[in-house]
Amino acid sequence: MIILFFSIQSQTNYISNAVDSSKNKVFSTYDIYEYNAYNWIKHNLSENILIISDRQTTIQANGIADKGYIDVNNDKIEDYQNYLKDVLSNEDPEYSYKKIKYLLNNPKFLCKNYFNTQDCKDFQNREIIVIIGEKTSNFAYNGKVQWFVKDFVKFKGLKKFFNETYFTEIYNENDKIYIFALNPKIGIPYN
Image (cartoon, rainbow, N blue to C red; front, side, top):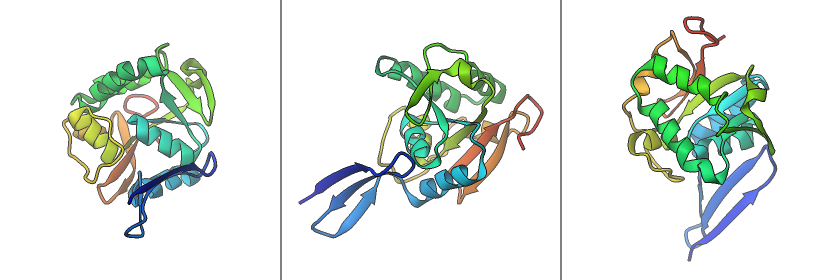
């Protein structure tokens, strides 16, 4: 018998579990690498951060890290997913850099912080980070949004995030999850 429990313990301590009572096992929708990364964001990055990632990752990271993220109204989810897949899977770092910057000027997309939704233009001066973990890598690889994935997929387009002209790698845990900061300007590293 499988019983599912979904709980929001607090805005900053989101956790979602599935419990298999017959085997006394708990399965989380995020793994220890994601949890560690989100805590690292919370304790090491400023309040001025805006998270870009697949929808599940942004929601989970915001729940633990208390940072802003880009989201959309339900009628624009497919548009955002297509836009994000293009940003992630494209191999040109300059193209992806500019597309991420453009998100803040695109009226289709909304920026959220906690449960507060604002026009992204109000977030123009935020530092932008891109979280790429197992969910994001699978989304970039196959375009499917998934809550439960087990492996990081080396997708077409990952290599561009290591181009220091446009992005700065600020976190990596065992090649399971990366966090890249968008450089404030092309050629000027994030610090």
